[in-house]
Image 1 (cartoon, rainbow, N blue to C red):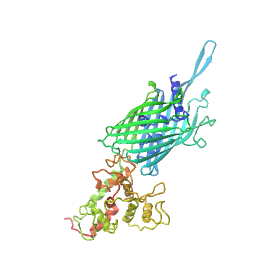
Image 2: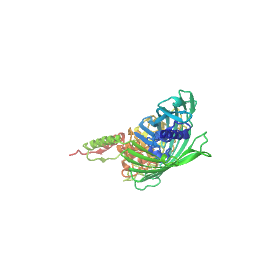
Image 3: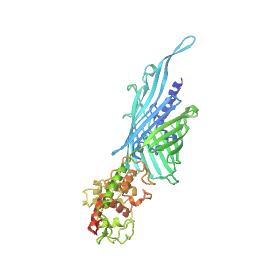
Image 4: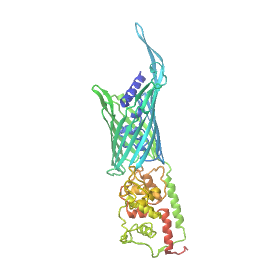
Length: 559
């Protein structure tokens, strides 16, 4: 009998969630999301994003794996698995959730004049599963989107008698977005089951005899990092965040639901979580809401994670369920380490060349506002002498002036010595043919140094941030971003930051030596001096500078 009650509970739970007993995504999403009360739409930073918001797969492009086990009423066994891997086109993910009840008795009732006789005919197993095929991609800095195709199946191992027709399958799709308006705040939204019943979005029972639409839902969430390197405040190595989701089911007579969660990391290895997960329930006045308390802990070490979740379901103590997850997120060999070793070996070889002293002769370009001892003086003057950068007619360079997107395109094209040609048609809505920088932007686009925005604008007037500029400089230098990184490139740049891989490879290559021992400050505008310094550290520029020095110096042979 206990198996029968377990099955009924499972079916009721699913029916409350989506109107059919097919979508397991209300439970089998991973221990971390469950311990946060499922307030995860804007968090979505690990492989659980496959189930909650596929746009999150693009947050930290790296190999991600998750798994979860748990039981409802000690009989409904849950298993979920998920993995994601980044490719050039975006991050692809695959997930699987299964729930089932084993050993359900099949009986028949025979009534006589004196008694009712129950005869067991056998047993059957019930199983329901979903296969997820996900894709996430960063559309522009701070904005990503993703989609998931879902394939539902459910049924009994013996499909006879009253169970005839209880097997079925279906398909539907989710679509999600994530936006980061500032480093402390992330906003997300996901539309679940968006396909209409007239086009694949349906569940079909018993070989097409009965079809049901799969009700859609909209979830909107916000994540606020209060304490941490990406938080409003910094306190040692601690992290603390709050997440809040609102869920509505259009065209259904159901109340809106709220999901609330908080996560505290007292150390780099331990996370403590708590939340409230609202679930719709039947009530005397119609449909009510259960406020289910959740809690959990997480352990992480070198990319490996262990998560535990405690989740109540209603007021019954027997409905309390424990979930366990094991995962992995981007650990392993660091490709940037190999690049660093190659660079160091090359520099060591250059240092062994028989030039022990360089005395610069005349002919080096100088500027009135670049004083002796200015930190980027050499880079600015050498590049200006080579014609790779230019100053202003008043004999100034204005090293502390912030660069715009148009200006950095001009600087990079001039540095490479390309011949800009005015394009035949408008490049963007805000870069017409007659725009002063159009010839340079045209070359920068062709060389893939920089790109425009999805709304067909370039924003040439916009000040370029350090994070954006380093991404551009990495392309300019011909660097290949690593598929994954295992540590934060700077104290204030977490490895999940959208530009973390570009920043990491640029740092290891040597473009960011001037920031050694300092914070990166990714949102700070890049100055003209910083751009000149980074250009001077590329292989192309270093070779040109070396030729210039040899031409303008006298040398003494090493003894």
